[in-house]
Image (cartoon, rainbow, N blue to C red; front, side, top):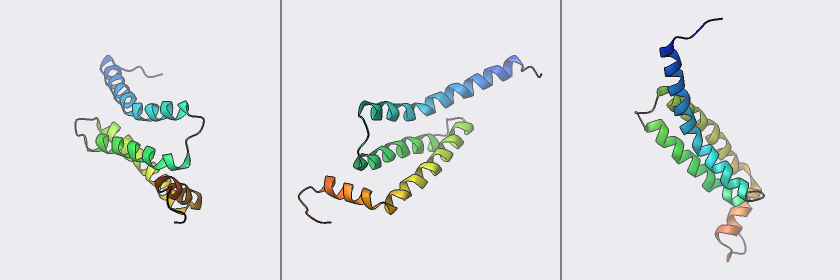
Amino acid sequence: MVLCSHAHVIVLTHCIIKLISFLQVFKNVTLKLSQANVPLLHQVIPIIDYIRNELDKVINDESKLLIVQKAAQNAALVLDRYYARTDESVMYRVAICKCAAPQVDAC
């Protein structure tokens, strides 16, 4: 078993604290979505946009640790893949059409 020096423990603790603050955005979204039984389909894109904007802030903030910026970049890649899948969803298009323009009979 390898023991870490005090300096390594301090650096590791600092990294963990920075990662926890980065993950706060996901906790906020989870808590908001937990208040409703199930998010409605048309609510997904604004949620994805909010998360993506928060990730972009972290990615572009050079004062953040590199490991935190890389974690945000990886999360953004995964999020972008899911975002692209909404283009393939007929149900999503119908939901957006009906909620965005209820006065329109057909889209």
